[in-house]
Amino acid sequence: DKTRCTTLKTRIIAQNQQIARVDKEIKDPLSADLRKRLLDFFTEKIQEIDGVILSDYNKGVLDFELTQTMIALANQHRKLILCDPKGKDYSKYSHASLITPNRAELEHALHLKLDSHANLSKALQILKETYQIAMPLVTLSEQGIAFLEKGELVNCPTIAKEVYDVTGAGDTVIASLTLSLLESKSLKEACEFANAAAAVVVGKMGSALTSLEEIALILNQTHPKILPLEKLLETLEPNQQKIVFTNGCFDLLHKGHASYLQKAKALGDILIVGLNSDASIKRLKGDKRPIVSEKDRAFLLASLSCVDYVVVFEEDTPIKLIQALKPDILVKGADYLNKEVIGSEFAKETHLMEFGEGYSTSAIIEKIKRTCSD
Image (tube, rainbow, N blue to C red; front, side, top):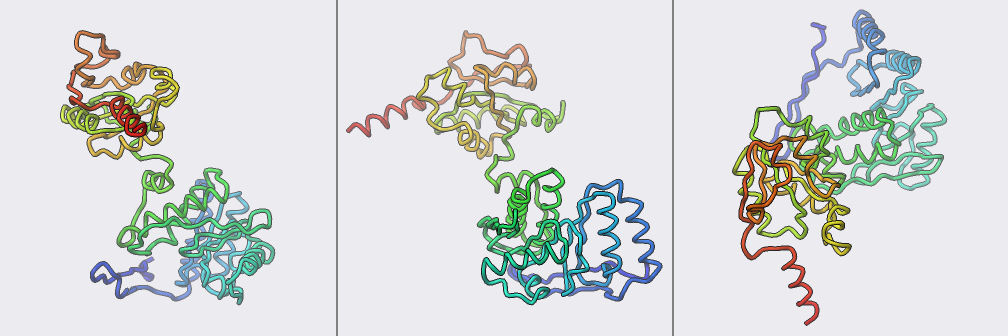
């Protein structure tokens, strides 16, 4: 609409601190024509979408009538609809799937000090019973997110992270909640995901974005470089980069491992490491191995700058990995000289490389044993 500019926020930053913000905006009520066009567009698109977010910035667009009409349409079509509320009158958001007020906003709307578990529970119960909010919730800044589950107050704590800029944290939370709930996650799981997403965003300057990989890393689920074979095959660009593959147990990662991997990476563009699972190592080396779990071994390998991807395999050999990846170069230790290198028929080239004299996991284990027995 040429008569109504999009809100433009200009933040003035000095020494990585926001000192002022200048907003260019129009806060007048919507014209009848613009209201009709917005509603017609929403009605036309409602069946094509999975969920709706109404972010109310109190700028004159989401008035009571329009907000309630959109919520009713979303419910009619069984679509998830989440609202980030503003103002005192929460009847405006009645029958929404979920709303995300912060502590100050909810205190202001309900005239209730949220200084105890009892009052938090009471406030959320009011949202559920008076305003028919399906999933009542309140964000509590550094204290995380609180919500009701079967009538009981549940707190999902925030994730400790150095805060550089809180710009966009609220938008990140409601977007992350929507994504998680659309994936049929529980409200607790959705809140954990949203807290992790917000932790990424507040660690960046400005109105920042986050990725699923960054969120997964915050949640300590996995490192973004650790992928199952199917996902890795989707990620790689065919014939675009020279792929180097090597494999091993990498139990008690040491300098010899790091040096070997750095040399392997120098042979091509992408270094993929196939990692024996815990079960695979036990079959190969006995019940006392591995010393370090596959989750931790994979994380350590993925943390090396020379390693691009790590794939854990359950079999005794990486033959299936090599056959699927068809690497340009297959790298093995020099001790394989005059021996069969498993999977070499699926690689364009096989390269044998010195591992690093004087370094071995077995030697480290024996040294620890001697030290402990002295």
